[in-house]
Structure formats: structure tokens, C-alpha cells
Length: 431
Image (cartoon, rainbow, N blue to C red):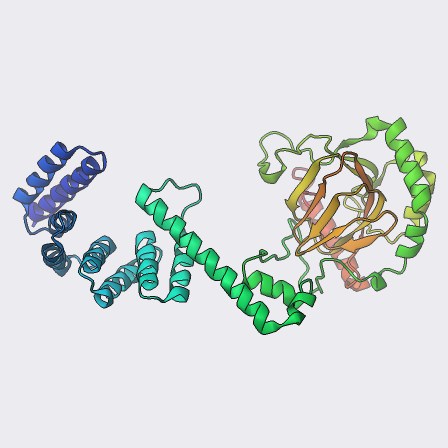
């Protein structure tokens, strides 16, 4: 028994070495190693498999099929053998049997790239274009990002991508025709976004707070203005706030600091370009519940207006209010905020053309003096494509759908979390 196990191990080692030699183009070494394996165990399934592949390369599909079927008699759990048999059956124009072999391979490994690509190709040859596109789409999902594929596999992947793209375009055109003009009118509606997600034209977003998630709250990307009656008096103060903003950044620029400022050793991910960069800078008026007294003194009208706003108050966490400056030709990458218990107010002050803001699926352009409130636990991003900086006032307020009792509970819980860590770890203020 031990001899048989040792023999099997040696045969597998020889076959693997032979395959590596063949891939490297070393025919002499391949032949030597393969002959050694054949002499040691001519009926071993891997020996029969490689012999079958060799016959297939010589154009002897019938002999190849016989050898591969013999190999599968003793090693039916190897998907590679089933794929080789399927390739042989293709040469013999036995499409139904080829599909059965591919299905056996996929039953053993549902994410086997070669089996998925060959299944898609077979369906395409059979004229089943929609089924082929589905199989190819699955194949594309299992291709490792950045993988270096062999030339023939890369070509098959490119063909798969082309088939999927064409199918998606045809499906979109068919849906448009079936839905009629209402589809065009509803492109920005919930239904329209749903159709676009189904077609793969936009990603599926979800709330993703980095600290604390409060469940079962309504979650619009942008909140209805009716929830915030104090937006109108805020907007009415725009000229005064804009004047103070412009004076502050012109005369007291030393208070401007990078909004993103992670220490060394922290994974930066999407923030690598902006970390410690003035491309996105902040002039803080309130910061984590602490008033920036000199800054507020410099901007008395802004301070007065903020005092009238229902900003979120949790010692050590809120309110936070600041002038946000995004430099020319700069962008803020997609990211999410810390909690949906607070929401974010934007009052645009200086907005050149070419400034956009996306929250979830909805993209808007800021307009000076027109405020909005959004939930930053949805993925959001910003762009300034202009040649001058963009400036807005930002502050946080409670989520309007929290009850007063829930606000108190959140404040107590957040302070308790802070107390637990006792300053050793900073929590709840992540960007």
C-alpha cells in the first residue's frame, strides 16, 4: 500500500514537471519526464490525461477521447480532465456530450474560468446568444483583478467581454422599446435608477457608516427641504457668510488645514492623494464639539447664524462646522461618513462652473446660496473641474427622523464609547 502511494506521488510529480517543461517550450525535457511517468504507471489517470492531450494536439480526437475516458474511470473528481474531454468532444462535433462534460467540470468547480469560457463559446456556437452572454458574464466575474492570462485565455476573455457588452446594449434597447417614453422621463426616478442598476450602468450603493449605524431610519440621499424649515434663514445670510469666508481665507490663511490628515502607518486607500494636501482644506469654526473661538470671532455673522441652527451637540463629537475649500482641478474620492444619526448641511458660497457633487446615485451641481442636506453614509464624491477654488459652509445636524429620546440615547452611547477607550483610541471621528 505504501508503495502504491509513493508511486502515485512520484507520477504526479513527474507529470507536473513535464507540464511545466512543455509550457516553457522545452520539448526534450517534456518527453523525458512524460516517458518516465508512462513507464512507471501507464494507466495512471494523469498519464492517460496527458497522453490524451497529446493525441488531441496531433489531431487524433478519437484516440484522445478514449484515453481521457479511461482516465476519468479512476479520477472523476478532477475538473481539468472533464474540460479536456469537452475539448475533445468539440473536435468531434458532439455538442450535447461536450456540454455534459463541461457541466460535470462546473459541478466540481463552479468558478472554473476555462469551463465557463468554453460553455459560453459552446452556447454561442449553438446560436443561444442570451445564454452565452450569461455564461460569459459569470466567467468575467471570476477573472482575478490584474491577472496575467495566457494568450489564448486572454483572447477568450476579450471575446466574452464583447459578447456581454453587446447583449447588455441589446437588452437596454429592448427595455427602452418595451417601457416606452416613460422610461426616458423616469431616468432619475427610483424606477429609472433600478433599471440602470439592473443593466449594470450604475453600481448598487448601500449605506456604509464607518462608526455607528442607526437601523430603520428613512434613508434618502438628499433630504426633502420640508424637513428643515431653518434652511431659508440660513440661505438669506449667504452674502454675509460669503464675505466673512473670503476675508478669513485671505487674511488668516494659516488657519486653513488639510481636511484629510492621517498619521503614518494608517491605510490611506482612496485618501493617498489628498492626505496632508491643501487641495481639500478646512477653516474650522467648530470642531468635534469645541468652538474655535478666534475663528468664530473673525466671522461674527457666521457665528451668529450657526448659533441659530440646530447643530448636533455631543461633547467630543459635535457640532462640527467649517468652511470647505476644494482647489481648482481637484476631486474628492468616493467615501462614506461616520453615522446616519447626523446629517450634513452644505451652504454653497463660491461655486464656479464645473463643480459637481454625487451622493449615492444622484449627482447635483451646487448653486450659490442654495443649501441642501444629505446623508453622508451613502457613498459620496465631489469634483471641481474649474480653474478656481470652490468654497462652501458645512455643518452637521441631527437626522430629522430620530425622536428626541433617540437623540439622547445616541448621545449617551457615543459618550460611553468614548469613555471606554479613555483617549487611548480615537473613535467616531473617522473621515
